[in-house]
Image (cartoon, rainbow, N blue to C red; front, side, top):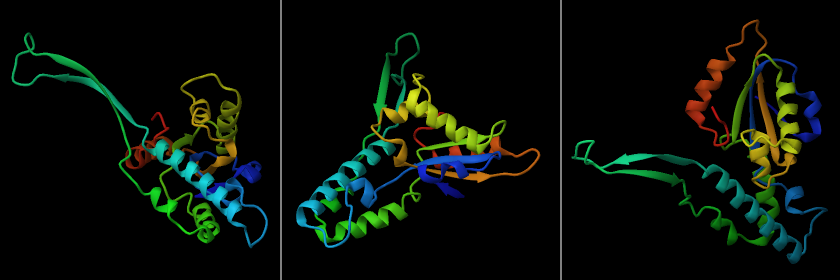
Length: 201
């Protein structure tokens, strides 16, 4: 997998393949931790608070699935059983982010550096394919949708609603240079295995 940020997006391959978007978990830049050591307590405290807000937002992205359907009363025939329309929204029972609340302020730079390196470890929030178009073209279509689309189903529009910025994303792609790349089958398989929360499948 090849990884790109907004700074090297022009290098994205002009080839078919599979691509994904992951969220940058944290970085010194995103947390406002600029400059060199030593950092004063106020700066470290502000960076820690910024990191906790970011991780809370990321956790909500991965706990954003919802189910809807109908339940029918069991043990009765269709003519007398009652039915119920239900909607279930996923909730996070994790308290893992709270572990960082008690970390020592001097550990914040190390945590930020590590999270920046580990940002592609979680499943991507979106996974797609480029078959008739190139990976480069699909990237810039999503970027354009993020900045200007009013289509509620587009990934860019939904991403904007999360309060993320475009440079909060890491673009990963796997070019497939072949006359008939099997990208549709690969995309379907990866959706089934990974279940990215913002892919429409």
